[in-house]
Image (cartoon, rainbow, N blue to C red; front, side):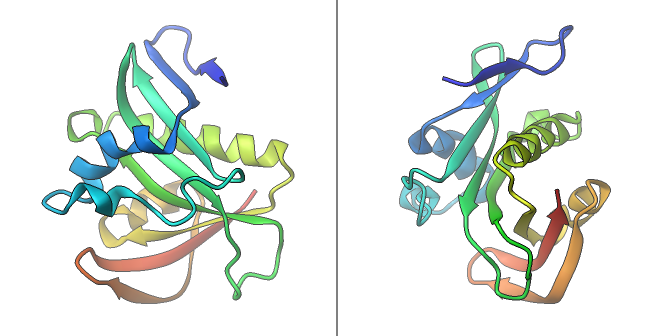
Length: 155
């Protein structure tokens, strides 16, 4: 399994994880109060999907998933969609979201992916802007979740 230490002086590690492992972070952060089944995303089990976990020693504290999926309003290909990025509440604001996102983008670059895009929650837009993502199109509502913005980044 893919395993890399990000910062030599820290206990954080990022590695590939199984889709089911994402649920322990997806549920409390992205689907709180909803059934556990809401943490299962279409395409989670595709061979082209990449699930990354960020660990503080042995505890999974952050996740992000990348799905092979094209937006019709972005002409460059190939492209991947970032979905389900989440950091446990007690770890938010410590820069580790940037670590796992950057790691995922680097991994996509090694696969010659040109574009990564996401549907960002309104509260996450500034986080993605700081990582050079740009808004495309108009905001839209996802039922039971809230206002989102499509955002993308050229890798």
